[in-house]
Image (cartoon, rainbow, N blue to C red; front, side, top):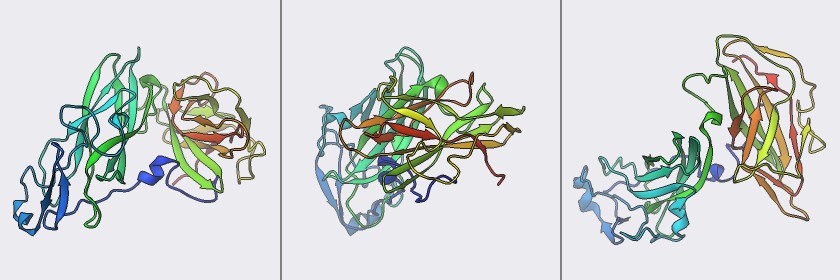
Amino acid sequence: MPYGRMRTSSLGLSAVLAGVLLLSACGSERVAAWSDGFQQTRGPDSADRRGDPSCGAPSTGMSPGSGTSELPGGSEDLEKDGVRITGPGRGVRDCDLYPFSAEFQVTNHETEPFTYTITFTFVSRSGEVLAGTEQTVPAVEPGQTVESTVALSRLPPQGPPVAGARIAKVRSVPADEAPAAAGPCPPSGIRVTLGNADAAMGLRVVGLRLENCSAHAYRLDGYPQLQLLDEDRKPVTGVEVLHGDGGISTVTGFDDPPQPVTLKPGQSVSAGLMWRNTVTDGISVNVPYVRVNAKAGAPPVMVTPELDLGTTGKLGVSPWKKDEAP
């Protein structure tokens, strides 16, 4: 996107957790953490045990029967905002291709269907974060509990083994407002999703992308309409949403005047959100959720850009601009 100067893969925790790491093979000596809390050292003689269900199987870091953590951290790392890690994953465990997994449950305590996006981390026995991943559980009905599994691919030959899984963050949005990046086209005929993120010297820019996935033309003229929401999805006050850069910074294309846009099926537009995370006097404001209306009357979509606004009280938004054809 044209709005930033320094490219990062994402903001906040997801940037730290990005990437897929590899588990060491059973043939090299290492310590495996087991679900009953004891450790066993595996040496070269275990190389012929490929396919053994116990080979290299780490624990979830839970003390048996207690629901508490046996690794650094607390029980809140195993149960958070309706999500609970319940045990180690099941399935074939190949010593050389062991995908460490953990089973978890999502329970919807709300009064309408919600979609949950959970950030999991995988840690060593000392608590070091080795890898992480996100998993989305869509449209959980009120009062329903859904069981699922989160899996880690391979880890590198060097480094400590995985000893457990942790819940780093849970984000939940009403199912009828959840972004639909793939699958059937929403009834609105448009997909609104987060785009790329940029960060440089405290300046943050994150993109919004709208795709016309319908069979008809879609018209826009102006700026996306935004409502900022806190951890409980309640409106955030004291933050100005400004058209253009609002004096936050000079970024190419951000202050371009809005132009009418007609999107043919398959075409898309982008806009940008810009802020600084400066902290001076006062209380820092963090905005995990933003409700987006593409235009007046358009159905809302709730995205999670994780705006760390500091004490600046400003958020700039650029107009919709048609994306160049690939």
